[in-house]
Structure formats: C-alpha cells, structure tokens
Amino acid sequence: MESMGKKAEKAEPCRIEWKVCHVCGRNGRNKVYKVKEMMYGTQEEFEYFSCEHCKCMQIDQVPEDMGKYYANNYYSLKERKPHVCEGEMKREGRVLDVGCGTGEWLLQWAEKGYGDLYGCDPFIEKDIHYGDRVYIKKCEISGVEGKYDFIRFADSFEHMANPLETLQCVKDLMAQDGMCDINMPVFPNAAWDAFGINWYQLDAPRHVILHSGESMKYLCEKCGLKIDGIVYNSNEYQFAVSYFYEKGYCYEEVKKQINDCCSRNTDWLEEFRECAIQCNELGYGDHALFHIVHA
Image (cartoon, rainbow, N blue to C red; front, top):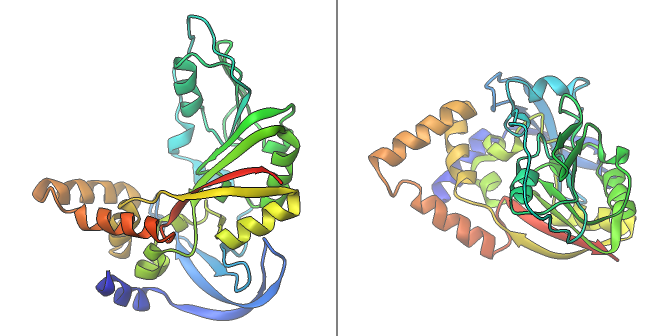
C-alpha cells in the first residue's frame, strides 16, 4: 500500500480556492481537484473539492441535466419482469427504499413474503407496481407521504445534492421508533490516500457528495436525528478498480481486466482484500453503513 500512496502524489493535482461547502455552509480554503467520468469512459472532467471543516468531498457544480449520466441501462434502472408474489403476506412494518431504481432489493424482500414495501426514484420512467406488495414512485423523497418503520438508502445518498433537505424528509417520514440505514461511500479513506482522483467511488458526476463522519453528524444534528452506529464495510474493489482507473480503463473495461488477472492468479485480489479488512477495522475504509434514529 505504501507504493500505491506514492503514485497518488502524481495522480492528485489540486489547487487551493475559497469555496463554500454545500453541506455545512462554511467558507474555507479548500483543495480543488479535476475528476474524470469513468463509468462510461467519456473522460469528461468535473471539479470536486474537499471541505476543510466537515471533511466531505463534493462536486463544485452539479450538471443541469443529470439524467444523461444515468443512461445506457444504468445498473439500478434495468427493466425487471412483471412480478406477482403468492402466499400469505408478512406485515412487519412499512419499508421505504430511497433511490431504489426499479426495485431489485424490494423484489427480493417481496419474494421472502414481506409486503408494505415502498420505493422512490426520480430516474425511473414511471411509477411501478409489483403485485400488491411493492410500490415505487417516480419522485424524490420529498414527494413521498406516510410513516415508515424502516427507511433505506443503498448507495443512493451520495447521489443527492440536497442532503439536509433529504434528512429532514427522513425525520418527517420515519416512525418514532423507526430506523434509517444509509449505506454509501465515505471520505476520507485509504483508497483515496492511495489513488487520489482515481479513487473509483468518486464516480463523477453521479456521486455529488462523498460524506464524512463529521458531515453526517452535522446533518443529523440539524434535523433532530442521531447516528446510532457506523459499520465500515468496504471491500477489495476500492483498490482493485481504482488501480485500473489510474491506468485509464473505464468501468466496463475494468471488470474484464480484473477477471483476467484473477484467472491468471487466483490470489490476485487477496492483498487488496486483506487491506480492506484492516481499513474497516480502523474505521478508514471507503464504504460504511450509518444507523440513524430520532435524537
């Protein structure tokens, strides 16, 4: 990992500018970076900066038309077959999956027999119903009504340019004894230290804010919520994918490169995997689950 850190010094050009943080609102002399779009390999550049106060990383200007960056059958928006579940429905509280796409996770829970499953996503084509168990609305969380016992963000919160308003909605929608789980990439982390602007979870411009523990604590306190626990759950791909991004491969090409490396050496990912375990133990992995409840 030390040698990867030396590479990052070259891969991390930045300048210092006064910028107002979109999260905490404080002005600071923040480091500004140019980050390339790599999922589709367009190489389009976007400016990101890290807040010296709340420590998060964020895009400077959100593109006006974000929809085009979720094109080409974006993974969470893939069309799914019409779905009808049979048998008695389990009702153990209402569930809301925010940024659920076409509802893969909700469908998995419906298959297990659960009902009262709801989702929302602004990038689906239209509202979706799967039988009488899953209901997905084409909207932001601000367009959702009712009370929910469990609210879930699975790699979606980092896509939201209005995190304070989003958590205020969570506060209003969450039942008094309910819980919200936010699973997402976090900053800073060891993969950033090693690969700088080639850290693949930057995912410009789709990931508009890469939150830190400090920025999440700030937002929750502003909304009358609190963090009840954090579980770091990063994996080896924070290093493996970033390694190939540094070499200029786009995401689809990276998957082939990793498969080729593993076919030649079945232990190729092992060092990265061991590093990820250590990073999680130290609270310095690039991905974490935040358990959030009412304060």
